[in-house]
Structures are given as C-alpha cells and as structure tokens.
Length: 370
Image 1 (tube, one colour):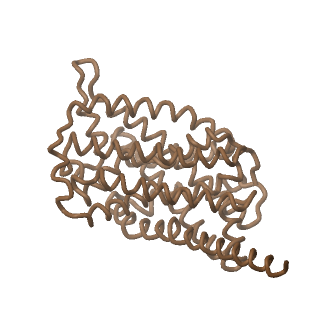
Image 2 (tube, one colour):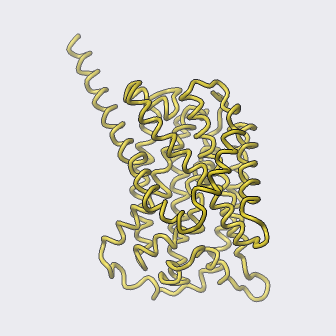
C-alpha cells in the first residue's frame, strides 16, 4: 500500500474538483428536467443533505486510524460480511472508473468533430495510468494548480453572463409543489454528494493532518456544491428551465451567451477547460480507489502492478458498455442512482449505527467490570 501523505489543502482541492467532476457541464440540465424553474432549490437542499453525509463520512473515517474504507468495512462488519460489502463498493468504483472516460470521449468528439472517440478516450486513460504510477502526492499537487484555473474561469464566466439573466425564468416559485424539488435533490445528491464516500480510500489514511483534513474535506464539498448551485441558478436565469432541460451541455450554451463588445465572446472553450480538469480529477479518484481497493482486498503490496492492465480493461469497457448517450442516461437513472444511494447513504448510515452500538456495548461492559 502507498503510505505517502498529502496536505489538508491538497485534500481540499482534490475533494473540491472530484466532487464537482462533470457536474458543471450537465447537472443543470438533469435537475431542470425534474424540478423545472425550481432547480436551484434542489441544489440548496442537496447542499444541506450532502454536508450532513460528508460529516458522517469524516466521523466514520477518523474512528479507525490507518485504515482505508475497505479496512473500515471489514472492521465494522467482520471478515465475511465485510468482504461481501467491500466487493459491492469495488464494483461500484469500477463501474464509475470506466464510465468517466466515456464522458471525456463523448464531449471531446462534440468539440473536435474529426477526432474519433476511442482516440480521445485512449489518451485520457493513458493519462490516468501515468498519474497513478507517479503516486497520490503528484496528482494531489496537480489539483492545486487545476483549482486555481477552474475557480478563475468559473468566476469570470458567471460574472460576464450574469447581465443576460431574467428573473421571470425562476418564477413562479414552487409552482409544481415540493415533490419535484425533492426528486431533483435526490438525483443531484447521487451525482455530487454521496459519491464522496470514495474519498475515505484517501482520507484520513494518506493525509498528514487528520484534524485539518476533516475541515478541508468539508470545505471542498461546500466549494463544489456552491459552484453547482450558482451554475444551476444562472443557467435557469439566463436560458430558462425549458432550454436548459433540453440541452445536452447547457453550461456550454450558457457560455455562448457571453458577449462583451467584440472583445470577449464565445467563451464555451473556457467551460470546456474547467470541465476537462475537474473530470480528469474525478477520473483519477475512481481509477485510483479501484486499483488500491482491489490490491488491498487481494493482499497485493504494490497497486501500481495492476494499473496498466486495469487501464486497458477500463478503456475497453468505456467504449463498449454504454455505446451512446441514451444507454448512458438510462444507466444513470436505473443503475447508478440506486447503487449510489445504497453504497453512499444506506450502508454508511448502517456503519454509523453499528459503530455507535459497539461503542455503547463496550462502555457498558467496562463499567460492569469496574
């Protein structure tokens, strides 16, 4: 296992960008299709719920020093049940690991029409393999640089497009009741909140300052969800919920609305850079936790030995499992969302309850002996 450490600030930037992931590009469309003009309310509810879940992840992670998520699961549930649950998590991480390259290839082909999707995907997977070979410290430092660019481009893009907003697009509030808002919040939480359970493969075992790491973990989540909230709100204000819901890449369409004289216009490539950087980070996250998780599960000392073979498997599956946007969309609704609710919400809550019960029984036993 890799024992190198990263700083709390690196954990912050890594958490922020991996939580954001591809959300900045497509999330407003997904939520607007469900919650309509109240999509921004779904984003607020998700932020509150996600903050609670992030705190629970931190609480569980810091109870067991020196253990990753796989080790914590085995410690809480025991060897037999722990291995079964661990396999479930590894399968989920693996499915996400080969799903990310598909998004990169699909969007890359949207911008570079003459470049075949497999070529773009192959280059992306090669970058993931190289990143894992360099180690967690190397790509954690890279996120510090990515974070600066993403923040700057995001602020500039949102400020420049804000004059085109129209308050009529978010009224009337709660026109369709509260149910669509809750549905949108559940869908959003599955994309930008509960998937953060994967960070427990890195925190706290690889973080130099565990107390500072907890704050950084939470701050990273809040930063990413603030970006999601602002993006969703401004997308609806500028384009209207109907246009946002029907657009494949609403944020790119939003950037095309920027027109400052004849100097600044058509800044959709700035959005593309932001998305590529954040998607690369989340791609690294799921690829890294997949191979380190498998290595820990089977007792392999050096996870880098399986990086290249796993990269080839992921490359193959990324272009065959979900060949088109329709299949990918169906998988998110039918496959991904239920899985992430189970592994990102239900099982962590069970882990928390089991830990509290074990702690209570241990204290009761000690008191009775005394």
